[in-house]
Length: 248
Image 1 (cartoon, one colour):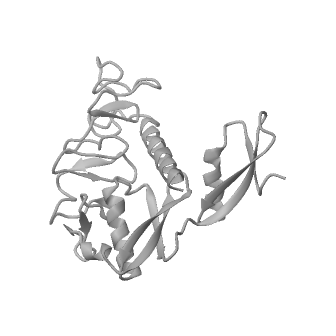
Image 2: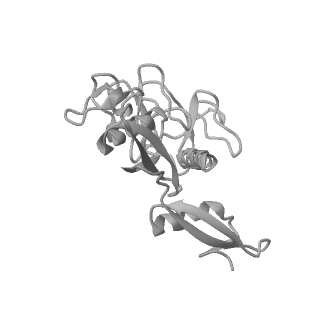
Image 3: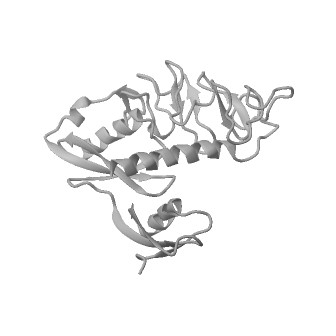
């Protein structure tokens, strides 16, 4: 099950990275803001240049966003890599309709929480005044084991739950939120209500067929029928067809 968890996260990271490269730049967006177009005279792959064709990559310290290799990691720059890292003292501020940006004005101790209540690792967002405070480690040292289910927002698959020790379901949720932040998964997963059993959703069987495969049963875990239909697509090549139920 752990293998499926890491595979799902890897798929999410790859897809998230590829999504950054898709779409068109906007000549009206000033460089180096997300969406800016390549600079004249810059070679593909270098900072300010166009993103190279697959499987090429932008040079170190840059990230491909909407076709342009943008500098990353500094204040006001896009966050680096699939794990959205920033330079020391900065926090990756998730943007719902744009690439995440490193910020010096949010996410740090006693500063306002970034978008989606994100704070730097080791900190948590105070829901009352929306400032980042030191995580309450007692919420992760309770007497009861809880399992907090996770939905991969990219694949729509149910993935390995987070196991925590807490004194209540509310404490378990707060602890799991801190784990998600520390893993850099904020914005990539959705937490489900804590349970006292490993919650990986419901089990769904599908039959996958292609020109070279007369029929293989694919089993996925999901929290809804619609999510299961989306999840199973990741197990299918471009030429296969999938129908609900195990192959006969």
